[in-house]
Amino acid sequence: MLPEFLPCSGTWFYGSLAMPYMCMRDHEGAQLTTKENVMELNLSTAYRVFDHGVKRVAKSLLLSEPYSPSVEPQIQSYVTQRAFIIFKLDLLLFQHRNKHDKERFVLFGKNALYHYLFTKKNIPVEEAKKMDFHDVLLTVWDELAEFQIPKDVDDYLHKNFYFNNPDPQSISPSLRSFDNSEWDPDFSDRRLNQ
Image (cartoon, rainbow, N blue to C red):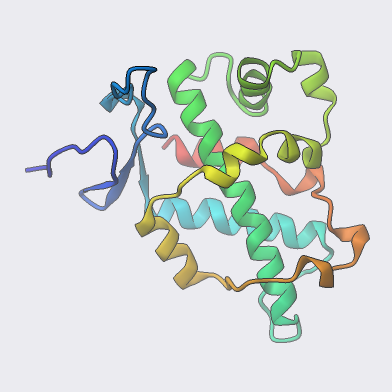
């Protein structure tokens, strides 16, 4: 038997975590989150998506192996933190796709981002398509900063990847901007949608 469904907190369902759609409420305080807006995120899928992000970030920063002993811990942590930001974007857009186009007829790949920017930020689709990845992150930064990854998933990632508090100032300014090559929305959506 499944545990009781709690729409505003994560609940284990046979090894996967149900994650509410940001526990939204209307102007009177009534909860808008429904069971249909919940995605199940299992730990192995979260690991694969996150690990793929780490590798893409490392490649963008010209690191062949981000966790080798020859790489400074500060750099390792910086790679992990960047991948974590991208992972949050992947989850945010996964929920957006599930709410607006569960079958992925239109909101596949980057189309979900364009739709999100259009509907949430009033950015015309053609303008959204011209934005570089760093500008996209700047535009949705408030949502990413507030986005809560389920505690169990967060704990699992922190246990399996090198998280620390990197000093972004210690990174070369030429490497601090996110590059378009760091994000693979098709991979993330395919994995998360399994």
